[in-house]
Image (cartoon, rainbow, N blue to C red):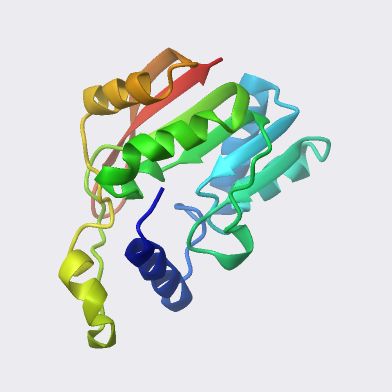
Length: 196
């Protein structure tokens, strides 16, 4: 799902600047967890790109009976993708970080991990940040230095077509865009709700 160079870059980046699953305000994640539980009523959740696992921690505080599993390539304790299926798969502001040439494979892998629903939120605008690669990582500089951290910035229609092509056992129940304001730049997010 990712190149070895990108895995290394994310691990190095996280070691120097830990992140907390996008917006790190716990009350925002608490509201999101509450909304997701109410909307899908899942018995289990797989969070693809879980960051520090804040979202799933909020889920478990609201309902400890929901089985949860988080995966994040950049964080050692969440490296294992596993094989188990979960009722609901969530992914918040993650897929735009996947290298474009790995999108098809990633979507296929995502489809294999849920049994009922997937809730995907994908930024379709550039991020505020760019990769900054130190000189001691010259092999990464050529490929990633000064590139936007959203490696795959594509319109909603592009993502729609990719999901249809690579997730044939799922139906897109609804799709819409949301704007997430921030002090420096608005982020537009495409939301996809898939059902098996």
